[in-house]
Image (cartoon, rainbow, N blue to C red; front, side, top):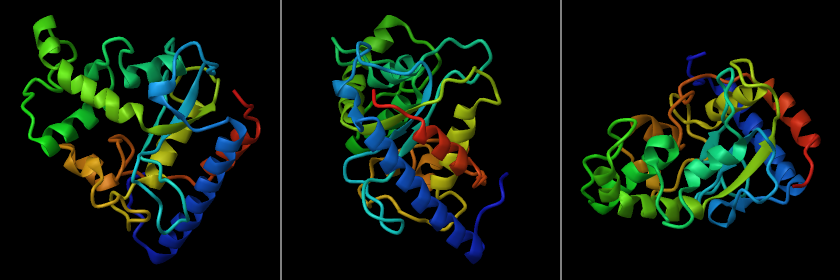
Amino acid sequence: MTRPLTDPAEGARRLSDLRRFYTLMDDLARRTNGPRRLAECSGRMAWPMRGVYFFMESGEFRSASGDGPRIVRVGTHALKEGSQTTLWKRLSQHKGRQRSGGGNHRGSIFRLLVGAALIDREGLAFPSWGQGNTAPREIRQGEHALECRVSDVMGRMPFLFLSVDDDPGPQSLRGVIERNAIALLSHSGKAPIDSPSPEWLGYRCSRERVRASGLWNQNHVDEAYDPAFLDTLETLIVAARRA
């Protein structure tokens, strides 16, 4: 699962699969009244219990595979057996806290990565950022200004979501879609298709896998994908209903 797709024939197949993937994303948007933005979302809105989400970003567009925004982050939740995390719970961890505007990057790797990129781009000093799974109150208070900046950036990112209400576990369809979509979209070890813009914030992230993949993801970016996942994705999208 780690062999790079560098063969020209495989590159052509990947381009074709990317075009199909984005056609399916367009269909998902039509069926779900999407996209939404985190800053405008709340738990009072209609959300499926479980699902997969696909984030886009201002200024980031496709080039080789067609027109429109490119996906910059794919994620899901509740992949461990017994997990009770819902789709909205996971999205709310990315969004941050409504009242204060802050958040907890130790509970969201997405927030951690965006914050790390802001630190580098803006020359900020937050040495505790990303250190440990928990932090005392005084540390968190010192990080509040950056958490607010992260909430602002992420709150403006459009995203789509797909209901996939299967049981938590390693064989979950949500996990299949997540890892294969990331592997398909990632540039790591592959000829770049739909490269990020030169100004993409992710290029300032300290995590090499983010910079190499062109995604706000670290897991699965170096893997090969199974094209059969697109058939599964299509079946689930056809079954999707408007929220």
